[in-house]
Length: 316
Image (tube, rainbow, N blue to C red):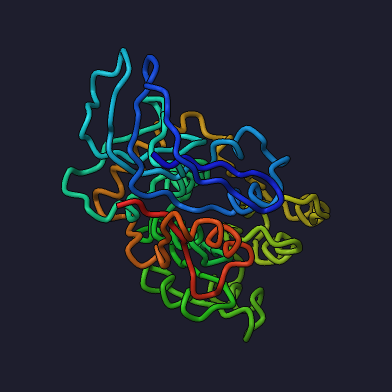
């Protein structure tokens, strides 16, 4: 089977290898699809970011169970699963703890549409946000994660939902997924437009881009005692508007998955919602690659071409 590792200085190794059998409470998964993440792009360029992960990259795997370890009684070989196992999922086979996989429907044939790790991150964040009926909500950033957030928000009982981005096609998708207002920040003042849509001030702003300076803009959109969700990954330290947060009484929520009380429960809930059609990735998975293209694919992630929402390695 093919195994993948990052070798440093922007290179990777795809070679023939083997994976050990699953240990107790583990499963061996034959990978059919694995999402490509900005963390992968970061690690291939600099393996010192995470040497352990770089040796066994990939964390958005979907596939078929090949073998189960001792103690696994509710999953069996042949079951189709999606996983949040952190590491190894870019290889043709990988080992995952039972708690990090969830069964998906037997009739699934487009494995890439069942990538669940990003959806699980969104479910975890929405659980932490405590969204209340009648809220005016703004989502800044309609990339892959922002569009998943918009899909998952309870549009049936929030008052207004405004999406902000600079790409018109992404804003069109945001409206298709339930955003009532779409603000093109390249054309309009995003703060003024968002405030107009929210009848004055927003109750909740979800920042899903991670761009320096965006938290100040998000804060301007919020009413006193409003709620700011930092969903985007701000990898570099930056100055944030702490005075405005204090004077406006802003509640700041850092909804990283590491805040989750049970990421395994979030996974199970994410898959159930995917089965019900709450999350639909058919228009979000915009580019697929195979092993000969993998190194190019990872370098193309950063910066990602504007027409690409989500890239996936497929193996079927």
